[in-house]
Amino acid sequence: MFNLFKKLSGVLIIVAVIGMQSCDKDDSILETAETQTELKNAVMNTFYSQSVSVGNGVARAWIKTTKTGDPLEVGIDLSGKALMNLPEEPVQYVLPLPKNKGNHFYNHVLFDWNPVGHEPPGVYDLPHFDFHFYITSIEKREAIPPMNPPYFDPAPDSMYIPANYMELPGLVPAMGAHWVDSTSSELPPILEKFTKTFIWGSHSGEFIFWEPMITREYLMTMPNDTIPIPQPEAYQKDGWYAMDYVITYSTRPEKYTIALVNLEYKQAQ
Image (cartoon, rainbow, N blue to C red):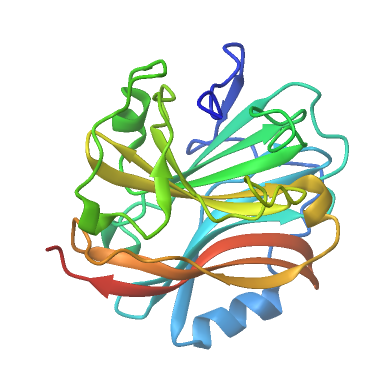
């Protein structure tokens, strides 16, 4: 389990940047004119990233804010066909969130497609996605160096760590250290089949990302789940932290949504 998040060195990275050509595959996650009118009249706003091609569909990240700019939710949508014809090799997609939205707290989404999963065998070796929501910049994330087990990256103070979470040895380059919930049902001693789990991520003693990890098979069941996120005693920096995350499927339009929701403002201690 110590090499749980060691990545293949040849991973293809696809970065969504301003000026990217619009995807011509499955555009069904784009709002209709009626939906856009409803959003204009609502008490909240949703701002979207550029779209990227995924499978036979598209994906894009978004952040939902109050009229005054406080973030309410941050997430990613995969169009209905995005789970079809996925690559046979691991792929990473980078989706910068719209600048100057959500009071500058969430910065970008990095999500991976792992067609054969990853270590350890018998646990996370199923086709799945890793959805990382970062509060640090792309440049700082990309500067994170590798570190091989059995060494550990410096951990945050214990009051910032949720109960039952443990750090895995090593450091994934351009990503960070990973923390798993030791009580998750896919881990020993329960060892149920992996469907979904929630990771915390850190670097140099600071938490910098949160990561729902979800199998393709589970997404194909068209779930409608809201899952509480374990919280620490205190928070390292002022910001908006998710109390729950959701995994949902909708039919109008057809899309899968993975999002951090019920964001609450917390002051640093």
